[in-house]
Image (tube, rainbow, N blue to C red):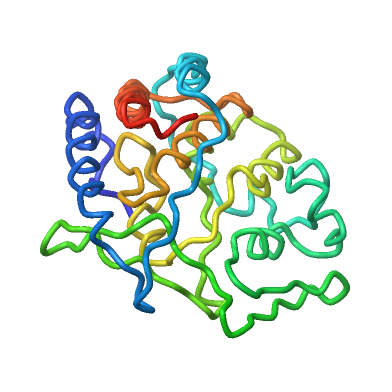
Length: 259
């Protein structure tokens, strides 16, 4: 889903996008502490960033700026997924035994809470009584503008595998010029995958960081991973996107969200 019906309209708002986004996020963050999950528990601890404020600032400046490209020639099939779990996808030694399973299945195991198991031979996911997936993206109520309760999901089929840098956004940012091997890596990279509430995922669609950042407690880690993926694969950012990233990173740094 896109916020604007045309690319021209989107660019018309490019100047104010970082400011508007920062204001929206700041409001949402105020509501985070008041939110609870749908099972009556707390929203859970906020995900922790893995790099320092200095490092994330330097990473933002490594991003190459370019006008956003077109969707010409795009399809999701240009990014082969789901691939089997290979070392190149970055899930690490902890998940090496699941080499028969797909990157999506391994992501589901990695992001689960409570008792969730993945059979390394059949790749069947089993969810225990206390197991499931707690969304950390957050979802704003369209009527009140406040953060809704964080969703706790127990059915694997009702969990989305979210690409942090959406595949269509990657295409518009230079992946259209990359080979299929590299696009496969973008689509299956552990850094670029996160289990999420389908409603939160749909609210993002294929938008870049100029138009969408998670309103919930995953926001700063999302920023880290979004920027990391773009730098890792040489994907560009347009000026509005770059500005939004700088503004959001500065906000996270000021609140001590990076170590």
